[in-house]
Image (tube, rainbow, N blue to C red; front, side, top):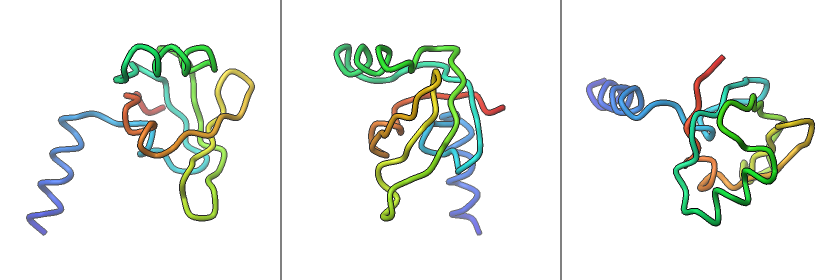
Amino acid sequence: MVLILKVLRKNLKEGSRLVDLRKGEAAILERLDLPGEDAQRLMELGFLPGAQISVAHSAPGGDPLVFRVDGSEVALRRETARHLAIKRL
């Protein structure tokens, strides 16, 4: 029980990440915590701060995840989605 509370507190402090969303949930992208070239490529695909993003589905093994953004579906690895800060809707 104590371990669960510590994990929950850590997640609240760090804020939500795109990887935390489940199928059907949506959020607003707050920032991309990635190196410049990686962030630039995602922004070209529609992952811009302020954009609404939802989870479409995931691959059978759970990685990659497929997100709907700017009218398109884009697959991202969980490791990449972990670096995108969001605000849940």
